[in-house]
Amino acid sequence: MAYTLLAGRVEDGSVNWQQLVDGLEFPATREVVSALCSRASSPVDHHFKHWDVVPLMAAGKVVAWLLGYGDACADAYGPQESSVQLLQHKLVLGGPAELRLQEAEPIYWVHFPKCGSSLINALIHLPGVCPLAHNLVLDEKSLGACWLEVWYKDWCHEACDKEKFWCPSVHGNLLPHQPIANYSAVAGKLMGMFRNPEQRILSGYRDDFNNFAAVNYAGHLQQILAMYANGTLDMERCTDSLHGLPKVPLLEFAEGWKGGMTYQLVVEHPTAQTLDLARPQMTRQDAEEAARRVREGFAFVGITEEWDLSVCLLHKMFGGACRASDFEDANPTSAGKSAHVDYDTSELMGWQDDVDGVVYAAALDVFHRNLIALNVSHESCRECYSHAGRDPSSSTSTW
Image 1 (tube, one colour):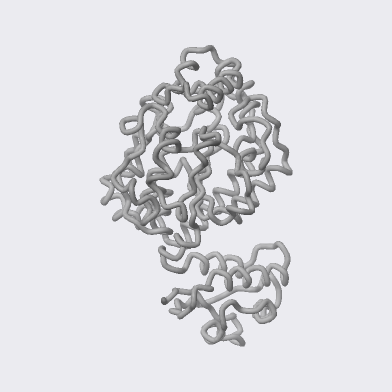
Image 2: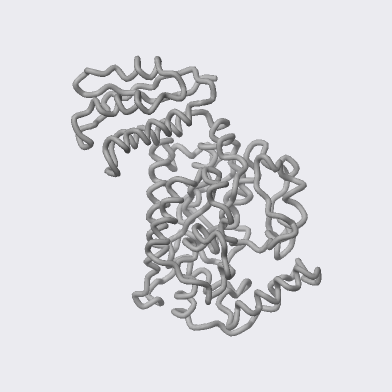
C-alpha cells in the first residue's frame, strides 16, 4: 500500500531527505532518527525547506516509525516546538483515511456535557464502524427523548462492530458524560468535541430539558440511577422528574461545573458523577494533564463552535461521505439559539473557568493544526457540504 509522506531538504543541502526516507526500514531506529535530527545547527534553525511529496511503500509500520522520529527529535532539542514536530504531525496525517480509521479503532467517544451529542451520528456512520446503524439517525424522533441512553442500552452492542466502536456495558452506568475509566487502554482511540468553557456552562444552565442546574440535582440523579438499576426508569421520559424544578444561582452552578472537561479526562476512579455540582474540584495540575491527553490521546478533536469544519475534518481524516445528520442538532438546548451566536458571558460577571480553559486551548491548537495539515477550509469542504445539503453560512444548530 502506498503512503504519502512529506520529505524535505535541509537548507544547506547537506542532507537529501528524500533519499534518506526512501532508504529507511520501518520502524527506523532511535539512533538513526537522532542522527537525522542532529544535522541542524539548533532547534530554532532546524527548518525544512522545499517540501516534496514522496510516495513510499511501507508495511503498516509507518505510524510507529513516525512516533519514534518525533520522540528522538524531542530528546535532541527538548520541549521547544520545532519544525520537526510540525513535520511529524503532517506525516502522521499523511496516510490514507482508511489507515487512520484503523489506527483509531475501536473509537472511544468522549462526550462532554453541552459540547454536541450529535457527533455520535457522524461517528457511527464512519465506514464499517456500526454496519447495522447505517440508516439510523440517533435523535428524539427515532429513539425517544432519552435517545442516547436508549442507544447505549438497546442498540449499540447490536449495531456496532465491537472491534471498531466502544460501547459501555449494559450492566453498568449508561448515563452519558462518564470519566474515562482507563486512559492508557484507550489512548489514541479517543474522539470528541470541545467547547469554550464559559459557553458550555451557560448552555448547561439554560438547558431546561435536562435541568442540570436544578436544586439538589445530585439527589435527583441518584434517584434516576436507582430507577435504572431496578428497571423502573421510563427511558422515554428519563428526565421528567427534573422538569420545572427551581435552579441554583448561575455562579453557584458555574463553580460546580468548573473543570468538567478536565474531570472526565483525568479522574479514572470517580467518586461522584461528572454532573454533580458537589464533585471534587479540579486543579491547574489536573488541567495540564488533561491538556496533555488531548494532544496525545485523541484521534479526533473537534470544536463545537466550528461544527461544520469539524464534521468536514472528521471525514477528511477517516473517510466516508458527509451526511445531513452530521450537521443536525439532536439535543437542542433551546429553540432559536444558534451555535454561531455566543451566549452573553456578562451574566458571569467576569467569572471564568480557568481550569477547562487550559484544556480548550489545547483542543483549539490540535484542531487548527489538523485543519492546516489536511487543507480543510470552508472552501475545500464544499463537496462535503453539498453532499449533506448543508449551507455553512446559515446554521440553525442550538447547542
